[in-house]
Length: 339
Length: 155
Image (cartoon, rainbow over all chains, first blue to last red; front, side, top):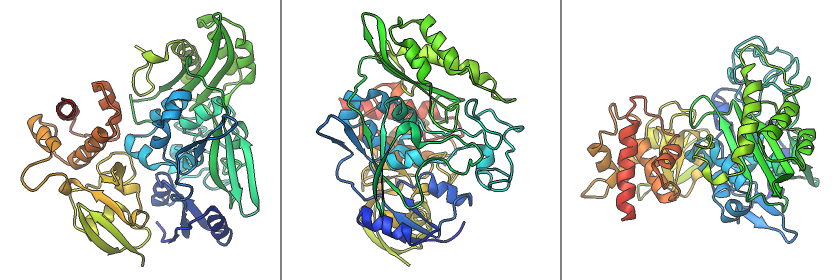
């Protein structure tokens, strides 16, 4: 564990100016991931720039066009329990509450949730090779113990998964990530934010050095009748997903429309397959339809020695969660299957 | 070295701590509030749970310097002068511990849970207490104790 300096800027302008002056500086907000990574020598900042107090006014801000803006420095708990999120975006609330623990959700911020690193055991062990940790050093997970690892979008260099629950719902909801740096502002559609590992697995996402996430926008499409987040894991609570599914849709005369299905725990990014969602347009909301969609979503899946089971698990989770979304009120706490 | 003002258990402390000192180490090593326990030191066990500005957080993943001017309650501060906090008494009544190492974190976490008011059912209490592990397996007693205090608070 290295020593580091600490500064607490009062504005986004000051924060982006400070990070621009120091190559080895990092932002800190909730700290739940970066402090842990630092303790494992996986992150060695020589200065931490505390952005936890920036834009702290409101957790969520309704915009005039109906968009709901999530403050990047609001905590996961503030967001999940906010009346406007519970009312209009219950899928997001469920997904956030399926992640981490109550204490961590009181600390972790929305911006930080997007930027958390993988929990691949090989990445998290400073003493073993890992292309994400040290580019070119190799990937022991491919031929090692890979129960938690990816089955979609993997590369020769990396089979890690992105561990967020919140981001699976943000993906399903077509969220937009708003970013600033010293030169200005830009926005990234959620689908383009997290990237696949390819041959540069050390790069998790499209955020550049010096950029700061200021907010996340939710489009004004509310899935309040038919939504569900299902998380399957090795213990009932406080564990990362083996497979998770965020499902939302509208029903007109029993026919599905505007279907969203996003998977977590299976890839280096939340996983959506447009073709499967379009296939379900106009279909009946039943086991047959969701099962056919699940086959489309998993058709490119490739398992490894210890995670082959995830392919069938994901298919069944998609079907189960589609049916659960018909009756969201029946779900048990902790994103478990309905009784 | 930065000076940090921490208001711990209703008393103010001006501390000189390096930026990399966790709130947990500041409480234990600098202020001698050793009731707060270091379990995993990685945010996986909940033994270090304290209440910071009214919310339960993990002191092991918190830098003390980031909590300047905050009000912290540790297990040493939950009782009043004459009697135990109702959760402390309920933990005794329900045998909600064996070795006791996780207990300060469990009780601070449960205080946070009751204040949040989100857990209505036993299943919800279990889910919202999942960040506190008990290696002795006293979980049934722990949930019983919380349910009793929650019930009394609702009456």
